[in-house]
Amino acid sequence: MEKLVSSWYNNVQRVPQDYIFPPEKRPGDLRVPVDEVIPVIDLSEAEQGDRTPTIQKILKAAQEFGFFQVINHGFSQNLMNESMVVCKELFGGSNEANKKSNSSEDVSKSCRVKTCGVRCSPDKVHLWRDLLLHQCHPLEKWQHTWPQHPTRYQECIGAYSVEVKKLASRILALICEGLGLKCGYFEDEQLSGRMFLSVNNYPPCPEPSLTLGLSKHADSNLITILLQDGVYGLEVLKEDKWIGVEPNPHAFVVNMGCFLQVISNNKLKAAEHRVVTNPNTARTSIAFFIASLEDRIIEPAKDLTNELHPPIYRPCKAKDFLTQFLAMDGDSGAVLRSLLA
Ligand SMILES: O=C(O)CCC(=O)C(=O)O
Ligand SMILES: [Fe+2]
Image (tube, rainbow, N blue to C red; front, side, top):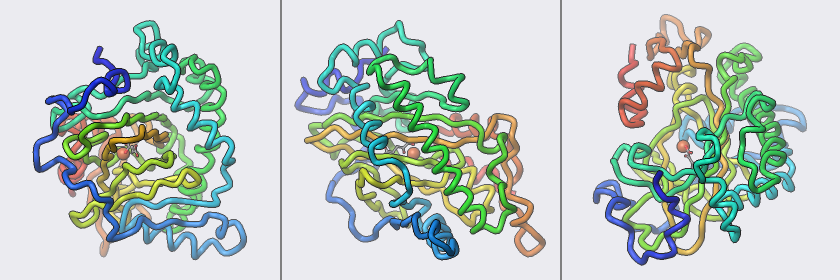
């Protein structure tokens, strides 16, 4: 088992060789890109009456950027703060006992805090990240398998999972309406019934220009709802330029996955993104992924295709998509191209 970055980063002044990306993949100059801003959408406006303006903003952002942030979403700020604190504690924080127990061989393999070995990165370079990844739906099936340290983890993240699932459904309902799909299209258990959560920890890095917390990728699911702490790191690729996602611990970042790009017949975009590191502060993020059951066929929605707008992609089972995705080292663009009709 590889040692967690959070357990040794403090002892090094240089990034170890196997964490250094090839020059063309390195973040290099780390000034925060400010050319464009990822749209921030106030969800309370849709609750107060006409949903149309909010839907239009969501669709536009999902088309142009594949990303947006939502504020005034109704999610309890206390629960957001508490979840972030609990997740930071997972990686030790000040508590070495937590860190050791969560990464020890005693913890069920599916719920162990681990680091990202070379297999996590298409470039065969290690990532400057530790993470915990687990399923969360149905809650009763998984909650007891989650880490027992910190002791509040299961309860707090259980509540978080329930609330973030509701938020995801609300956002998917707005997208559904915006695309002109029949009401409840995304509520199908086969299509959106696989949910998992990953807690990412990016420790401070002595040479952020050489390495990455997460290399360029698009998510291979339907939609992702991400909570970040106040530390910069997430960047989105748009027309060959990286755009920084402003850290806002009161907002959720929403991004479209490849399945939504296929279903929407390219109306919405699964944008590539990456995470850069910084020398001073650890960054934590909590990503909630809505994905499809393995046997669900993913294809352009029938209501969005006709003679004038033929399906751009061939139907493909969710599990075959994922197999391809892994075989192509997470190159979502290549997988999508291989599915062109
Ligand atoms: O940590 C982040 O901000 C992004 C995480 C991410 O992109 C992912 O887990 O797929
Ligand atoms: Fe991602």
